[in-house]
Length: 249
Image (cartoon, rainbow, N blue to C red):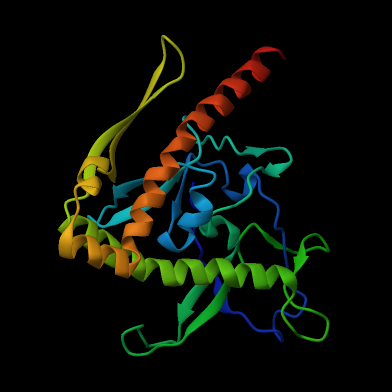
């Protein structure tokens, strides 16, 4: 579930001096999702917690996804206490904020990225609940600094991602698969139309292609993706613990 951002305004410490944002995670804020869009700029943190797979979007562009659950609208890391992981993907850590460019400009024209806030977002608080965005003197509050880091990950990662997938395709590293997760002797979860790094072809790389991938940082991203797949077994354990807890109620 993605929450659309509609009523956006350029963030500033005058108009939004008293702005507060509810930073906790729950289904009410769209966190009950079984996968999250992630970027290579956060792979190091993501691969410690979640399996990373790739897919093509409606425009045929590759995206990176962290697998969070095995059923629809299931985030195994989400419970009444919040999002229980050492790292929350930037697309969910950013809250009601996004990067926008100056009106009438594009990135290619040198448009300066600026922070905008969706004032209709359910995380925006109209009470004293929530984290302040600005300090009383007008400086950035710690929450806003965390948001800025998340937005930087998204902004920088989007361009890197396009170049990375182009390099992966050139080196024939992308492999179309159906993810099969065995929960028990009788239950198999299948997730079709996903891509991953072909470990066989990755191991056979040599020469100019290997050097180019290493120098660009794409080789490291490929190894992090492969390493992340070990977290599938963690999802299975979490899923089975969740079921055991529900059956005992």
